[in-house]
Length: 260
Image 1 (cartoon, rainbow, N blue to C red):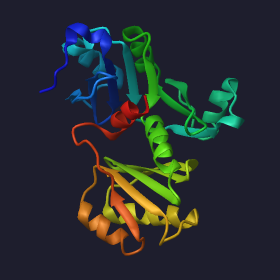
Image 2 (image 1 turned 90 degrees about the vertical axis):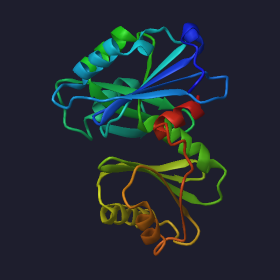
Image 3 (image 1 turned 180 degrees about the horizontal axis):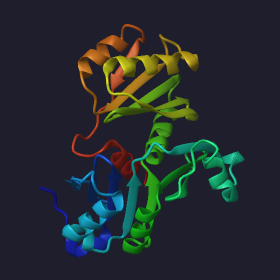
Image 4 (image 1 turned 90 degrees about the horizontal axis):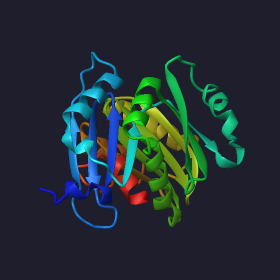
C-alpha cells in the first residue's frame, strides 16, 4: 500500500491516462521517492470517451482533490511529429490534416518536446477536451507518445550506436528510431501477432539502414509470446532486449514521471 496523504494533495502530481482499452490514473510526489498510488477504471465501449470520463470523475474520490500538477495522457494513433525548426503554431491544424482525414468532433493540440526538438501534433475528442478543461482547468494534456519520445531520446543520447525502441500496446505497437539522441522516426503499426511484429520491425530496421550487428532493439509493453518473439528477432539482430520496467504502471506514465 502506498503512503499517499490525500489531505495534502496539493503536494502531489495526478496523472490520468485515457484509452479506449480503459482508464487509469496515478498519484505521486514529484520530490519524494516511493511507490505511487495507481488504479485502473474500466470503460464501457458502448459509451463515448466523454461519458466514461464523466462516470470516472463522479465515482472516484481521489479525483476530487486539488493537486499541485495534473497531467492528462491521451492514448491515440492520430499524431504526427514535426521538426521544431519547421513548426509554426498557426499551421498546427494544416500540418495535422495533411496526414489525417478531417473529423468534426476533434480538437487538435500540440506538445512541444524540447529534448527531442520536435512538435508533436495530435487530435482528441472535442467533448472530452472540453470536459477536461472544465474539470482540470490547469491540466497539461499530452499524447501518450510525447513522454515516450522524450524518454527514449534521453536514453539514446549517450549511446554510441543507433537504437530502435518499441512499445507494445493491445493490437498495435509504436516504434521510435533514434541516432544518438536524434529522432529519425516515430510510427504506429496495427498488429497483434508475433509474425506481424517481426515483419514490421525488420522492415523498419532495413528501411533505416540499421546494422544487424552494432545497433540495438529495445522492447517494452504487453506482448503475447514474449520468449518466442525475442528468440525469433535474435535470429536476425544481434542486440535485442526487453527494457526493465515497473510492472504496476503503464510505461508512458513512467516516462512522464522520469521526464518531469
